[in-house]
Image (cartoon, rainbow, N blue to C red; front, side):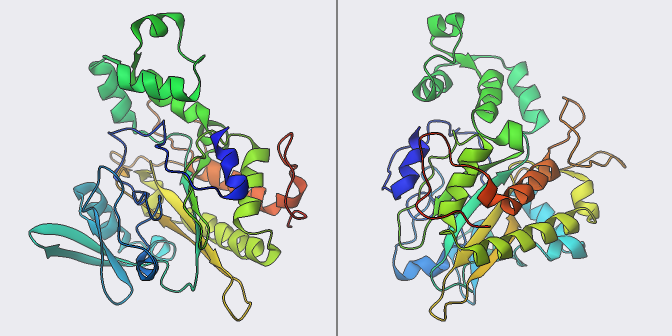
Amino acid sequence: MPWLRFRKFRRSKSVDPTDEDEESRSWGLIKQVVHWSPFVQVYKKKYPWVQLAGHNGAFKPCDNGTILKKLTEKEYVCLNKILDDTYMLQITPKFHGKVEKEGVEYVKLQDLLAEFDNPSVCDIKMGTRTYLEEELIKAREKLTMRKDMYEKMVKVDKNEPTEEEHNFKAVTKPRYMQWRERLSSTATLGFRIDGIKQADRDPDKNFKTVRTNQEVAYVLRKHIDYRDETRLKLLERLKEIRSTLEKSKFFASHEVIGSSLLLVHDQPADGVARANVWMIDFGKTTPLNGDKQLDHRTPWVEGNQEDGYLFGLDNLVELFENLSNIPAPEGLEDDQPAVG
């Protein structure tokens, strides 16, 4: 399992075999420095500002604790709507409008790492699916066999394709999209670890086969360096976010796909742990028609647009509550006694 390299935080320059060209232009688009979030201005003291492959120019550093992200219309509309939702404002980066540089429009956002000395970052992709219903419908309307997706699939599991798919050496996009969600904890737990950057260590994005409670807990215990103070602060914030989302009209009236929770913590020189969590990435968030609302917990059936966001957040909260009671995966041991 590739994610086991996280055990010793080994360097990895491999390309994630499940990445798609059509995926959302998410906050998680910084590959060589921090694979999952643009809020990395603090890192420019040590590293160059490098964009994710295929999205060069999407992000730019800015001043006064802000960053710039290349504007997309759907996200820009969402960010403006959030300004009118007092609940969403409590859990999302501050939005400072749009600016233009060298003929390119950007949204100006709070740099979420600015308050930390030497942060460790974890991006958790929320929901039971990471594709919109309309994407699935469009893929079916233009049903073609994709050799590139077949190659990505067999790199992960050579036994997954059917005999017919092996013969064609290709799979359809809907087949690939749904398999990809089952591969990780997305379909079962309603969230998946998308990437981790430990302080002063290379980033790691090899987590898409981390699927079980035991595997997720094992990775997160290492991420927080077995510090119970950090666990408790992250848990408190996760509960606050859940309570806030349950009250938000914006959240209830949108299909929230491809959005992440950004977990950040550090251990500053004074020895007092700092930790926070924010909801990020609205590039695929879509308003519902009319007065329709989602509860974000009902299982998804095509047509109901449920995204499973709160289902996943419920599971994430429970996991942090019981982090010490969840055993390590078979054959693995924790470096230190479990926290919690």
